[in-house]
Amino acid sequence: MIFLGLGLGLEGGRHIAMRMVLTRVPPAGQRAAKLVINLAGLAFSAYLAKIGVDITIFVAKSGQASPTLNISMAWLYIVMPVGFGLLALRYLLEIVTAADRFAVEVDPVHHV
Image (tube, rainbow, N blue to C red; front, top):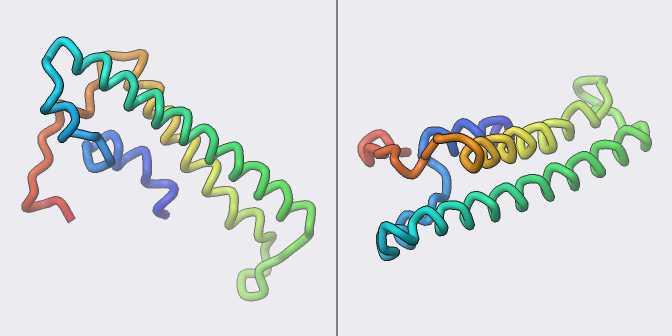
């Protein structure tokens, strides 16, 4: 569930945003800083999605099954590449659209 919720956390402004860095950069440099942060997040998420696909394929080929659920363990591992793929998509949307998660004000009272 954590992997599947990564993109929602990013969209809601509850993911790592490097706000401390952005507040110290002049407004002219904030756009470039946001782009660098989003590109780094996109690259990292895409890399982890690729690793997740490799692991899922390996587990599927091994024929390993869950003893309690009696299903292929690949179904349990598939959430990693799906979750990080969705997170990468969210970073990509931040780069190519007008979306700006940095503008979202997070209420610390409701931030758990």
